Length: 300
Image: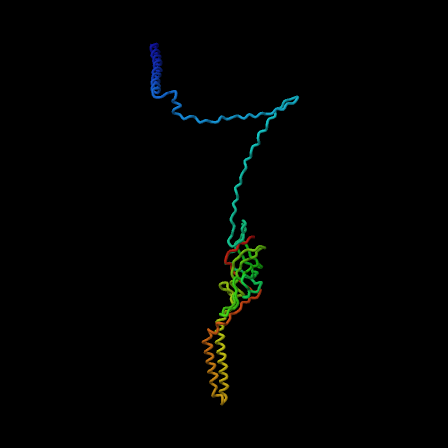
């Protein structure tokens, strides 16, 4: 029985490989019918890229021979290169401040806000005789406190005359217009822009320092002249009335005085056209007040 089982297993093992071999052979025959096995790889696959064959560099090492020993000197390896570190460029901050000549990166710039007022005294005569472009200097008489900075008393301001004229026959008074354009602080001069708000304790409007307008004063003067003449004629008529001879003509001076008064009163607006206005003359040492119209940037 054992021999029979062994024979069957041996037969099975012998037959199975033969069957598999015949199946593989049939597949090969189908491939050979449709393709040429010798050219299959060349026809369907792209050629391999050509690569350059690396060449080896052989360095010869010089030998030095002595009578006793032979030493071999090798060339030293090239030093390692240290990578250079490129520092990023530092960006400069644009510090071109408005109304200032500061162009460097100055991070200590302090702003004096527009609207700040200063009490000053004049160092020169302020008069309507000053020509356009003339300079007038002022010195502060009281400190001004701002955030981070104090503008001490004694700070010098410079003003430029931007307009001026003498009294006019139309009744206008003299005129002086001052514009603050410079300020000195800790040895440096800075641009400024300010106007005068008070001059000699009087309020100044629109930055115009004006003399008194003479037109209405001329009108008043003409009326006063007519009234004064009328009073004189009244006195004359009274004296004539006390005299028996002069009583007849005593009304005549009064009539002339009334007519003169009426003419002066009615014609005063016309007669006053040629009356000149008042002069502008403010002596040195007078007190002024100025007000900044733009910010000022100072450095500490």
